[in-house]
Image (cartoon, rainbow, N blue to C red; front, side, top):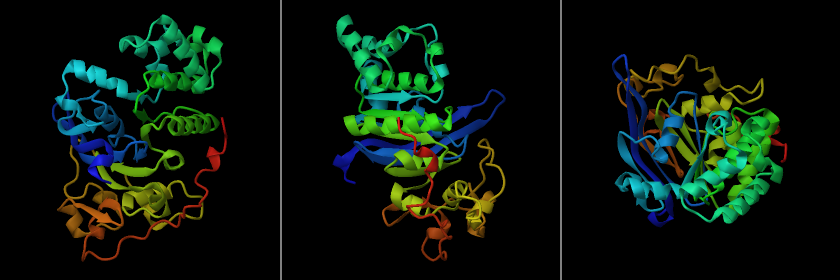
Length: 341
């Protein structure tokens, strides 16, 4: 990837929160990646690893403690409040829970029209036509415009959220666990809708999830997050053929069928307290391949065949890398993603 290919650049992003009882919580630490226009990056990790905080920092909804985010050539921290407000037309977010993100007092037409009003786009008639187009795009009937969010199912409410995010024709959409609150069959419908919309409009997605099956369905590239850090990134096809980092192997093993569980799936224990992360490699207390050096020094990022990984096992002279799970690119990860809609 060259500099001219980069649409989204995240450079050294970090965030700490001061706790009321004292002390600091390290939510995100030194996250960097670059993303091409029209590409979908899936960010995956256990709950509490900092994915949602990262998503909000990418859009500058949560200001970072350090680092920069560049969207379409504009450094967000360098923009004035007025310029940042205008820039938000280019970048929108789909939240996890439509019950919380949709105002229950507003009708659907007002919810979808609101971004157009905020950005001063079109007159009333033009906005009404746009609302009708968006409802049709996400598979909802025209009469849905006159109803309230509570009158819809969870999947339909998420379709309304998607329509609202698309109203101002953004280039970048950050989707934070957009299907995790939905039934499995409805998840498939929403994922297929997001894929169709991306292909139709050439959108760039950052897709946050804890579910690797969902990430595989939609992503061009994958980034694995652990305790606020990106520990592995790479093309989705290569990643699912065999991840490099032991933590990534553990996540992938969790979706394998019974009887196919590799050694990495035996990793036990809970994630460490982010208020006091372990020294060295933060994954070492749970890693079956832990060496003495892992307890003392944080591993640098290493490039291997176009992929990036932070693990001492992949440093020169540190021995062979751990075995990857026996999951080829044709493995049945997406049995539950067959529903169209």
